[in-house]
Length: 637
Image (cartoon, one colour):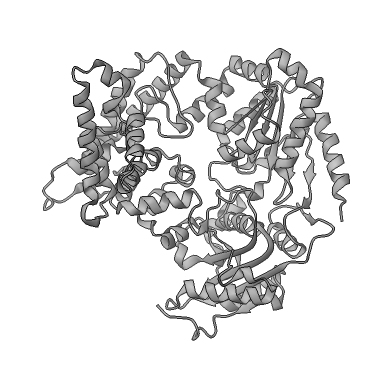
């Protein structure tokens, strides 16, 4: 086994040589699951501070550190004592910091982008059929033209990386990333500004950093390699988001340093062996447990999915079995403390009671990342404004109601009250708007999301995101339902609007369940929610029938189904397949376990899966437990 002290010493030497301003060298640090990646990042920052801290303070230069979540930013800041020579931020915050003073350039980019979008919509309008889709496009064209007309009058643009951006001068998340990537790629002056202020850029979770910006940073490094050190930390096997750069490790230039942390400090020996096997067909990275690691426990439970068993009770029985196997009472009973993880978000959506809201939006590829981290345009409007207001009203928390309305409602904004002839009248309007909204919940009702949106739009209680303009227009459009609807032609519909239309037709409670899920307050862990986290007892649940997804397939990964022709074609062309995606997320979930791991597979092909897994040598025969042959002791639905 590799000695952890010697590996740490070697890594420190490599990183010190790279983070050398006299002769900088960019690097990609492979850091697998449980390897202490954040610790390595912080140690690199501390080494740099010791050598160059005073020089950077005097020259107003900084080291930029980009990580994925605000919580991760706060943790890193704390570990380096909030030292001012480091700028630690999320990718959206960093991108905005780069561009936020270049309002003229932003105006030109935005104007050009809007003109292209309008032309595309007008072209579709000319060739498309009359009906719902045509009406949607008309609303979009009008909205974009109004925004285009306003651009010339906007002196300063604004952006909030942590919420909804709906002001007249606001940019959305995608625009900020797009502008920053284009500026860094095509404007030499922006490249000079970046390397002058941030000669060192460290990117944590680099496999999930938005691909256009990663490519832009590669461009800057390639052109200014003697002045700019780009350091990427991560593991491509742990890529979760669809907008991360596929094949990042292979794209790293040959001349870069490529150190690796091969020790897994988190998991016991048996789990480390399993995750090495899982990734073995994807790359040649191998981890080792620490010298004194315990053996640990892994079991795979095959459950016959005949459609009649109560899966909640099945999983409770499996937890009891794990308690017996491990002699760990926290697997079951009153002291139970286990983390249940799924590979497919749609499965958690079904179990969590928010599937009708989630599924239409999840089908839109460009929506997925924003839907899963809560930043999709329209989501913060509900999660940060309407939902908190409704909860405050339901709990009769008058202070919270007043705070939310004062903070977010244009009816009582400082400008409105200052210019109004009757400020008291404006406050009464806000009170009436709040009363109108909460009346939807009278008699324990659970109103459709669209009704809350229509109420807010009608009263102007909050400024509504542009994405909802076509939806409200549809809802308010009086139509004779007996007339045929030509807009059912899927080639003419706007799938983005159709997805939102379906999502907003569901009860409001589904939005609340969804928010609990993305903030990791539900009983199931999200993929992004568990990034970097670890749990003593983990139960991974695999269920193709319940998930019904097309992005992942456990049956394919486990040999119950053959790869499709599309999988074969993608594999031949070097593209990602559903098997690749499933393997990655299976690796992520299994690698969270600190002590014991239970994998539960619901299937109709138990024999095929058992044979295939033994061929792969992922599990020994004694570790595969067939509880599907006799389900008589499980309660039936």
